[in-house]
Image 1 (cartoon, rainbow, N blue to C red):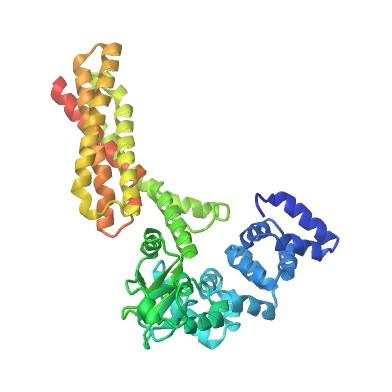
Image 2: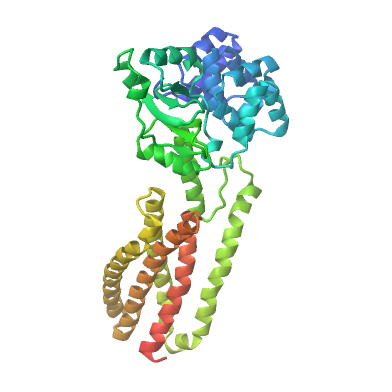
Amino acid sequence: MENINIEEIITNIREKLEKKDLNSAREILENMQPQDIAILFKELTDEEVVKLYRILSKDLAVETFAEMDSDSQENLIKALTDKELKEVIDDLFTDDTVDLIEEMPSNVVKRILRTIPPEERKLINEFLRYPENSAGSIMTDEFVDLKENMTVKDAFDKIRKVSIDKETIYTCYVLSENRKLLGILTVKELLLSNMEDSIKNLMNRNVIYGTTLEDQEEVANKLKKYDLLALPIVDNEKRLVGIITVDDAIDVLEEENTEDFQKMAAIRPNDEEYFKTSVFKHAKSRILWLLFLMLSATITGKIITNYEQAFEALPLLVAFIPMIMGTGGNCGSQASTLIIRGLATNEIQPKDIFKAIWKETRVAILVGVVLSIVNGIIVMWQYNDLLLAVVVGITLICTVLLAKVLGCILPILAKKLRLDPAIMASPLITTIVDICSVLIYFVVATSILNI
């Protein structure tokens, strides 16, 4: 269903529910995608959601449940019977079940675990033990594995037998007897081969893979870089333990980008939606950074206080402080944004620091000279003071150069120290540049104007 109008569907669905016309309501939902139904459910009451969920076909119900947010899932679980809950959990893929358990409160988790068979529960517990944000924590074990001594016919027989329980069957993984990853094979390659051909001769042994403890963002970037639909995940002995599919990688990249935006705005990362986060939690996530930046800015005030004599000798100096600080902060933000983006896409590596500094230095000189010339013309036109124009011009060149270099170095240094480069974004860079630019301004002014 394209270009759906949620408001119109809600009105239509509610009319059907009031008339107890569940068949018509089911018809509407069966023509929608699970993602759209999940959005629709967010706009309905809990009672309406339960009624509608129970009339969905089994497959659509499970897919819709996987797309619902954690609050909606929790409310639905509380309303479902043990039998209904078991049906949902049985048909969920392992990675979705793990995500569900991680999001739910303990009382709901206990109820979920009661519906899971002991063997599967043991597997889920193993997944839950992987560090947060690691590849192991988001992988699934629903993949098709083959043996190298199989023929193409054997492979198709196995795919038909197990495919109903697998998240993806397009890529098959060839394993040894002790489950070590030997190679991969696509269904396309199988279809184009003879039934008697050996898997050993067809498989691609040059396998791109991730490890269980590898950062989830790095794994997602591998999927993106090599245009893969799924990435095999191995343990330290190269035994295949799971795969990460492209849909999970997209979720990871979205989470990481959101986290970077929050850090770049000096906000502590928060996974919850904006309107679902309490005012207190919003304030708590912002106030520490704001306190740090505010206290750091007092250094600028201290520097200005130390140069009171310069103000007394030439009060006009004060008029240029906001312009110099603002220009420096903007230049630093430009450089840091480009470097952070380059680090995120792996276009820039920590080893490229001197190469990046050299590039930003040349950019800074060009930008600084142009800004100084334009500002010099304005000063001469307004105040007809050549020395003041020289002071402001030199300060601008030095400030722009410093801001560009700092905006380049700090994110790369953070990456080198295994920190998130996003923390070295606009607010922090601006505060540091403000302090330095004011200091440069008064040093240049007192030297040239002899005050």
